[in-house]
Structures are given as C-alpha cells and as structure tokens.
Image 1 (cartoon, helix red, strand yellow):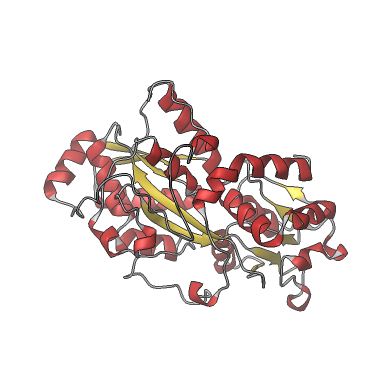
Image 2 (image 1 turned 60 degrees about the vertical axis):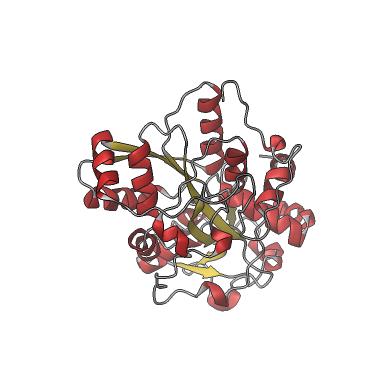
Length: 354
C-alpha cells in the first residue's frame, strides 16, 4: 500500500463491480468466511491489546454512546473515537495508508462507496461477526469484509415554532416556493457522506435543475449532515432541505421544536457500513468491537438513543417513529456514487458557489 493514492476515479477502472440498491456485494474472493462467535479467547486477547481505534462519521454523541457501552461490557479496553465527516475519514485513511501508517482498527462511513474502494485495494479484513449472519443478504458483503452498521434517511424538516404544520413543505418541489427564500439550510456533499449519497440520488431522480433552482433560495450552506438539524433547532432557519433523520428524532424526542418531513418524491436512503482493516494495530480488539457493533445490544442502542435504523432482525423500532417500510425512499447505488462523486462535488460547488 505504499504510495497508493485513493481516488474515486480509481474505482471500477479495469474491474467489473456492481452495487445496486442497498447492496454492497462485490465478488473478489471465493466466498465469505464463516461467522465467528465472541469467545473468551478473543476477549482475553483484546484485553491484552487494551484499546481500539475507531474512525467514524457517525454523529459524535451516538458514536461515544456505542464506545461507552462497549467499554462497560469489556472493562480494560478503551475505544479511541475519531469522528469527522465521511469524506474526511476517507481522505485521512488514504493519506495514512499512502504513508504506510496503519492507525485505524475499525471504520464506519456514511458513504458506502468508500468500502468498495477499500475492498478493491485489498486493505479490509474478511471477518463476519455471528450476528451479521442474520442480516439481510443485501446488507452484508458477499466476501465478509463489511456490513451495514446503521441505516437512516436524509430528510426535510422544519421548526414548529416558525412554521405551521399546514404550511410546511411536503416535497422537494415545495422548497422552491419563493416563501422559503432565505429560510432554508442544507449540508455539503464535499464534507458529508450522507449528503454526497443524498445529492447523487436527488440529482438522478429530480435532475440538476432542482439544485439550480434551490440555489436561488439564498440557502444557508453548512458542512455536516448533523448541522442542518442543529440550525433548525436554534431557529436560525425555518426549514432544512437535507440532513440526518436521526438527529431530528433525537431533538424531537427531547422536546425540541422540530418535525420530520418525508418528501413525496422519496427520501434519500443512506447506508453506513462498518469494516475492520487487515493491518489494524489492535486486531483482536478490532474484531471484538466489530462484533459488538453488529450485535443486537449495540443495534438496539443506536435505535433507542441514536435515532438510527437497523437491519438486525431482532431489533425493534422505537414507538412514535414512522417505520421505514412505510416511507417512500430513493434507491441507493454506492457504485454510481463512487464513479460520479468527483463530478457531483464539482457541479454542486459551482451551482451553490461554495
């Protein structure tokens, strides 16, 4: 991996990889390794290593709750959480590996296309936690190198102190109404994997014309997909055009004046996989942490306190939230995001002048 440069343009060059919908499966290896249970031997080896390094684009409070739950279950192993936007996570790992620095054990990204690149470059470890065997096939890599840690939507939402329910936008098209000029906040695909994925799906289904018209609405441009919900909560903007559904759940359930909207055209579906690196500095702790993240315990935690959704079959939706099955969603396509990512960022920046 010395001097290896990571670029979206590298993906699929000379290779045949198909990723459709929420499916991450690529066929590079012969078969997936068998599921591995958590054994006392693994726990003992992980405790000798004493720590795990976790790079993630999950909102920091959620990532820290998962880390603390792991540390409580396995005393003596600390989780060093490095949280930033998915595109920054990808760049950092690329820079580290090009310099032969192996600092990350486990990674999570809200841009599923990153895992296609890491797998293609041969730096992910085939490892299937026992619980992952229960996951739907489209949410686990066929070669066992990653699986869906979290699922969520990028949605519209509004501040209930500033907007009446009957006046709230019901669709993306509604955001183009002149009454919303100077009242909308949205995040940037150059920073956020969630917004990169959402922007791809929206330009595919709605066309770039939608964004060109939206740019005329004097948008407040922020970075992370966690930022629009925060601006909404503070009343700095009345409506968000995109952002994390899970942050809106957290705020609403805490009594804050926000309300989600599921656009009539469909809400972008986002998949955030987890994977372990072959050259993880703490290989046993990495496996143990990956197994914990995919367990029912951790998956129920990210639902209950994180506002996320899970594909673990033994989890339950939290009361009061609209079930995913009842929401019209746009189709995810990680391979297309990878191939078009640079073009999407460039065109978006040109349209919004950011």
